[in-house]
Image 1 (cartoon, rainbow, N blue to C red):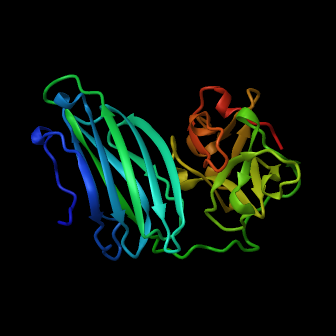
Image 2 (image 1 turned 90 degrees about the vertical axis):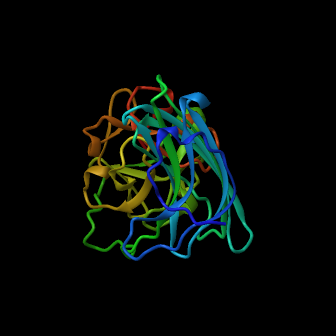
Length: 291
């Protein structure tokens, strides 16, 4: 199987359906991501859409997957869905799925449910709003590099606020904000789970505009903005962990001038769904109680 590198793909190249097994390239030290693992090209003749169905064998220094969507011309509206089944070295398989949308160029993170997977079967679909025979685009499936920066450890110098109120954060369909596995690790996923007052993973303290659990704070990962994932991170009074609970019961994050809200993606009712932030629109999947 030929290895594929990122190339400029002309809109006239034709619609491409990718299927089979692709071995992702070994990471080069200091690069942001591995070479592209798969592509599909969008043409108006294809209805402005394309699909890929590919098995990726991640390189040793694996940090995740993402869809990188471009359009020609730029700024066309795109919508994408994806699903994956990733398998660990012990044979454990975990399925994930998600969506993404906006204007191209657009990065759509692909959640990987196991650590250091040996393979990931990925299915992805993209639709680009084309309106002439000169418009098109490309969807790339990229492997992300493992972070070259060691994971920091919370220390006494972190700014964990004191005081406040403690309890459950209840949201859509009776689900609660949950620290996956009651973790004390930086970058642990923050997910939906059935509400239980006896579940320690759901006990949050709201103090000085921050939501604290196990000495860490609810955080907009990398200040990503719309579609970004919610994690635990060292409390440092950063804008990505400052949350304002307003009268319509939304939690708005300071990092984006309080225009992005804590969100149950897709009105999910599934335990383990990782929370995200999206533009605030006062929808029921953005309504949360104060602890």
